[in-house]
Image (cartoon, rainbow over all chains, first blue to last red; front, top):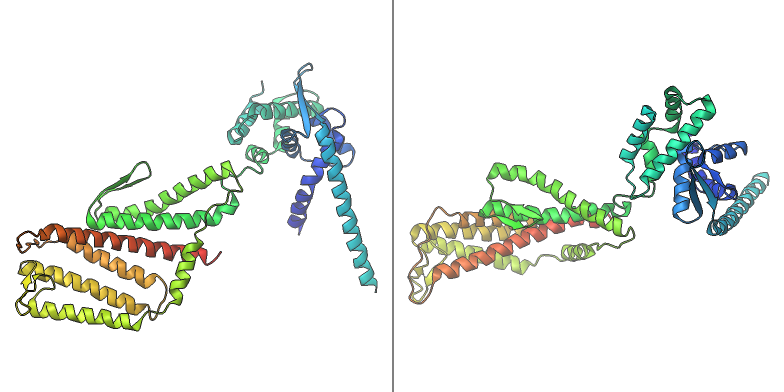
Length: 115
Length: 312
């Protein structure tokens, strides 16, 4: 049961985290900063999961990156691209539609069980 | 320079089979670990780094996350892997068997080398053949996957269609009678004249044998045994309408042909002016051998292909 929930959560997080990253990167951030930022919002993500997703999003042109070497150590900053914004918008509408469908099904289920 | 961090990154790099950007990935992980260590322990020490590293994950798992979606062979080719290996193995096994029985070498550079083998070498050669064929097909599917995961590879449905059609068809009783009649005729000839092969039948009561006495007997018995196999193989189809009887029959004939090619008896042909009996006979035997080898190969391909095609 626990394993099933963990697997399901991993599957659900896969898409959700990408939307989250696209939303968070409206402001320039590097990986560690982003982890902390997400933690503050109540969402915990494994650090070794975030970086591969950032790389994939960058490869698809949804975010862009640049190294900042001015500080103590080099940091890779990310920012959403216009393409990323439009994908985020679409993804959010899909997510809302899915949410509505789920709500409808759950409401119908509760009606059936009451009657 | 922190040795434990360098070792950790080096190990990730070992598993990180990405085309490009490996250095950048490692630089980012390094930057993250140092930053987190500093944030949690205020100063960066090897001890602190070790704790952060243990939380970051095992190198193999970290590398695997970057490789998600990257496939060596597409899972959709799983059936192709076994089917193609089966077909290749059927051809390879038949050729190896032919090389073993008829004592010849075969080279198709750089894919195939079948040496002339003794029985022990042949026994060791077969398992190696399976591994080789599997490897060759895997290599082919790897290249296809890297080029295009959605490539449509041929699936030989043709085999299963032919197979199904052949299974539906009942063996002909008249042909069975004809085969038995031929067998009886040749058996009679062998018993009456001591041979089944004649150079001349101008005088039906005293036909001229094609070979001397010993060779006549030897080759006639072999030929009669081959017809016997044909009769039994055809009769077996009344009970079992798969390709197995065909395979067994042709395999038995192939073994008998081996005794023709490696005969201990000298084929002393009768002398007929203007006719080279030796060349004619050897050509016929060669063609017949090739036909039988191809039939064994075909039956083996059918038998193996059916195992996969039927389950599709």
